[in-house]
Length: 121
Image 1 (tube, rainbow, N blue to C red):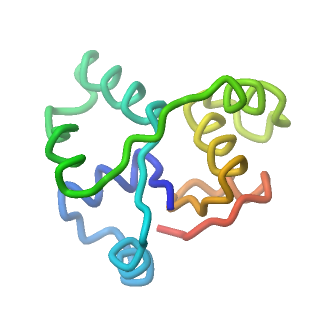
Image 2: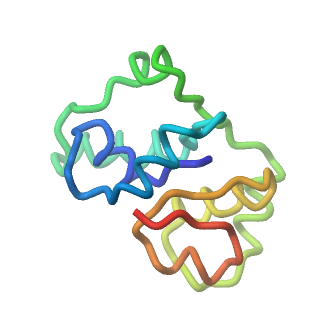
């Protein structure tokens, strides 16, 4: 299971926004990952002041969250996806999920247009 950036933030801040079904799916997942594209995106947001320093990557990894590297094949697929979604970070997450057969936990309805399994948050 791959977490979108908004879900990761809601999860780490223990936000009540996440619906019970999404929380349950996350808790029961045998594989829980975050794309390196998400790390990159959130570090940019932190750097420009849109996000405080709530994410401690080493602590998340210690808790069992896997960091999913970006491979050449991911970049090629992300670049070839239809432009339903113009956010390059989200396009990478979609490509990674498609290549690995992973569902994505997200609030972003545009992900659905790519035919990836989605768990709505």
